[in-house]
Image (tube, rainbow, N blue to C red):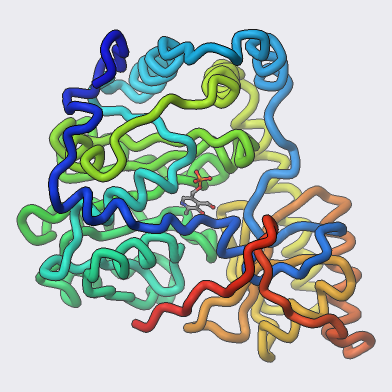
Length: 397
Ligand SMILES: Cc1ncc(COP(=O)(O)O)c(C=O)c1O
């Protein structure tokens, strides 16, 4: 550890990584914007409801905190990391050793997959499910086990257990990305109680604040083999500022750290996250706004006879009953950028809940596209927003 840096949790040397970990450092991290924008057209104007971003952005207190800290931008200000770790630990009833912060939750997600899966230990996830961990599993040559959701669109924990006696890591995303559906706490407990020895359950709670679902943090407090991921990218509207965290038993956290260690966080992200946590109105207010807009869209879809999966999150799956990619293209030609498809459900497209005005534009465009009033007329160039070309390879099951 760099001398003088005092994140209270880190016991490993900054440079002290294992041979296995250093081999896996070549791991390319795949994130939601990469997955979303791989299917986004070159035009970046219009309604962007394809990447589960929060159109509200950071709250007022977070914006002010960024302005106030800007003059200190020339310094590392490492104590701000300590402050945020302590703040999160206190909020969750954990000791600081159980918490690590990162520039977003993508890093701990990938590093945990690298740490707990291997050629011998499989990665088990839901289908459709958030794909990022699948790329990490592929990079470390772990067997990828994709288990269909139940009829109620929950993770089928019993089938996940049955499918992988060799499991190294079970990934449970609740609310699930892309469906916004929940997996019950009792099912997560069942998974943890029945999983193979030495395997880990990682519960991704990126969207939990949009729902009424109970957190799995109690299982971390009980010292189970459980990791919980949280991010400031969703309800807190800080996707571009980058702040996330992993919570878990210190020995599990140390294994994750082998794959990326820690680095200084941007101080803007630290103070914005801290201010957001202190804003007692933020979560209830934004949860209400999202739920109201979402139920308005669902009511409209119902009235117009469209099929969708009811969601507890800021995204949902719309069944277009035709090739979803064609609908994505046709919507993009209307300047409404909707989310990608999952190969297991090729007629479904993921829609992010935007502002009320954005969802009105979505509805108008969808009606035109679905009634055949318009069709796709743009090329599908598969460019990254930052100009990098190339499509992410599809993952075979
Ligand atoms: C389920 C899930 N987990 C983790 C992430 C990672 O987000 P970030 O790296 O912005 O914290 C995302 C991003 O959309 C997500 O959907």
